[in-house]
Image 1: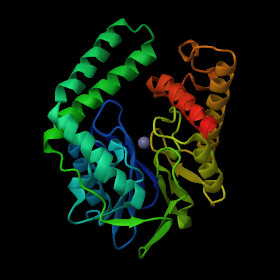
Image 2 (image 1 turned 30 degrees about the vertical axis):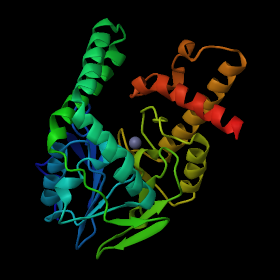
Image 3 (image 1 turned 120 degrees about the vertical axis):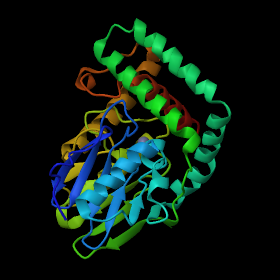
Image 4 (image 1 turned 90 degrees about the vertical axis):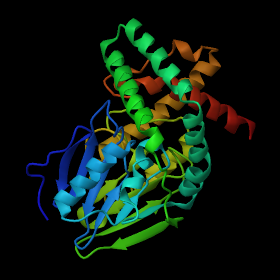
Length: 321
Ligand SMILES: [Zn+2]
């Protein structure tokens, strides 16, 4: 096994050696990675967590795994079903076992597969959206937002370019609560406490190194994405994660961080819940709400409006039930 040395990453990601044998592949914005991935040397085998959005980015990830550990990945974990964590799976089969929760696999097999079929049948719908965003970018005066919109569009273009070659590959091993993979040098625990960011979210905990690879349950200095979320369950899950002995977090997006990032995600969800509840009570339109100052420097600003909407829908739903 070797350190990063000359291989510092690719156009899709930058490598960060979290500890000896654990490497975070931090996404370069506007490319086919979109989310982060992680390479873990188990001693006798290699494990990869999440597989990026495009085949090309995933090929770079496999190349990094081979360079850093001397072997291809034999385990791949999908923390949740989102495309930027699963679309590169095909690069790793048949050599690797692909593992997720059973709910994540079910959603990949139904909802995601259907969506990909539709995207292939009507690519012009997505290209129209890309063109429309291009026009918005021309009009946008906020430089940071403009940059982020450009990144969104660049990543979408890479995804669309790849789409005809995509063989969406499903996990072949599933678990419902907990699974341990025992390596000769370190063991990893795959854990799910249910669904928060999506209907089912898993994390990868490495007890020996006190590292948690969190998928999108924790993002660092990025707006968490609430589109498919259950905010209350998300908070409950993070409270449980806090009980684990964690020192370092590899987030789904953003730089390697500490438990502080987990606390910031909890604050964000709590703040949004309060903001949207207040707005409803005062009959204020969600369009009038601007990003709170605490989160103005964060990335994924383009998700803020849809997060308000998702929170609003969720509050309506729980009031009814
Ligand atoms: Zn996600």
